[in-house]
Image (cartoon, rainbow, N blue to C red):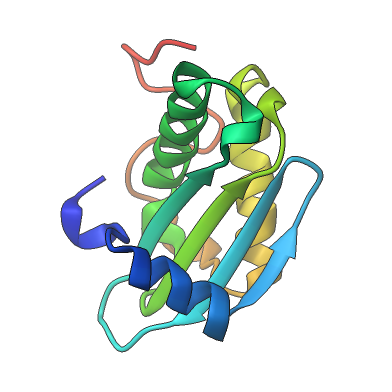
Length: 131
């Protein structure tokens, strides 16, 4: 995911948590706050209680890739923080992870389904992606 599309500073994460709204599903939560930019930015959180560094990094990588594949369908002008709630995210089917993220985006009202034409069709995993 390009640098311009990512939240990077702790203050950015704190602002989304403080000023935004939140939604959750069984294994994942989303905090969303409007920004004054032409693009949406995303951040990914996996707490230490979910496992060691390898597990947490795997969870964040999988969430980041799922969002990257559907980024064109996200309404611009939002800061989004995806929070892993369970270590099971490291091992669930990638299509299930995409479906959970899409459900959260739809509930938050930032999903533009007509725009999701570019990139990979929903539910497919690009070649070279290792589960």
